Image (tube, rainbow, N blue to C red; front, side, top):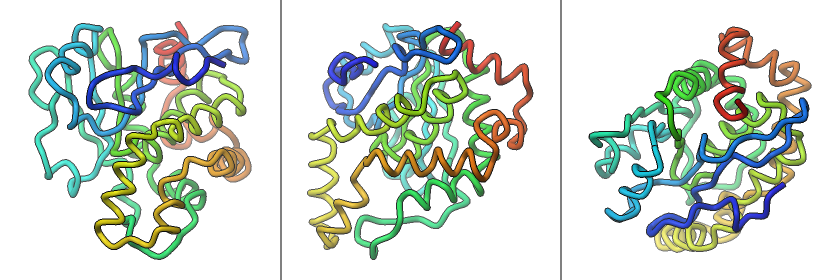
Length: 244
């Protein structure tokens, strides 16, 4: 597994854009660099960073945020001349949460997402499969929850081992600037400090619990992808997108 600094893309205005390449797979291969990126909100990217992403053959941006988030500001890639943009509200079937709420179980929320958001997961994965040649970047707000689950599904579909899937999720903890910004915003809004820390955490055990649930309740990644409608051909294309 690669070290966190080598995996992060250092761009002005971003703290948590990461490459899914460099992980070993069960078939003896390796996920490829510069195929699929995961990230946080892109609204703080400056013009130089936007141009840098585009010049690195960025083909598609998939925005996983809901309408209550996308309506706050225009997305920097929503009308880009060379980069396609898709907004797929991944957690539309789940109740909204805020950083000022009473405590809740994040692992349970992830498991609920697997149960209730299958059609949206399928839509996201098909967007990745069908994207033009080049980089695909999917993101939410922090690049942790919605993005983390999609990354886990993609990596698992490629045969990446559970320990690496969990470690990839936990790397968000290294995005100190992003976490600090979200913490300050939540505290300013009256959030309870202990609850805020729970919401912002990217604990390995949260992803471990979700992957265990994926196996126990849904039969594992292959059975889950089949259940949400992906065909064997689509699963192969998804793996080839990152590994081929």
